[in-house]
Length: 232
Image (tube, rainbow, N blue to C red; front, top):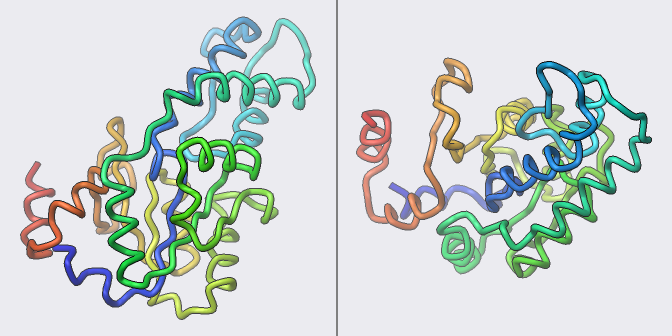
């Protein structure tokens, strides 16, 4: 499927959390570690997949009842510190490094566009030694509205100075997919284990398990792959 699939694209944009790294469960646990002793709501709410940390903490604060009243900044720092203490649990999505090398060898430009802020992004990218793969990194610090707003992808296109047809995006969250599509970009979705294709709506989209799915199918026919995936 994928041997010539990317020939028509000049740039590939990747989301970070849940896309090129498996870290959602680490963030979830950090939120629970910090907030579980504070929340007294009968049905605790810990935010949605794809939200950046600031927005997630804001929604947690708005949707729960608390024993105490720490400031937002205090909760933010506590969660970030807990995550940093467990960052060794974060892993690279299978196949990403091989796939990124394949793209770089073909002369493609690789961008990272993430809802995470610069500090968080730097800790993850440097910790996993992923810096050299990306020509440019755009974080929540560079925009006013995070995904699902399309601003981050509009900024990416502006920086690339390419026609949108020459760019493809890899995302995992519904918010990220909506942001990229609203910006007019084609999207390939790494389907999270807890999601199914119908969770993203009725629009026809291409879903993959991980980047090994691509590197293992560089010589297969596109229609064959899609039929096999849909028959699972």
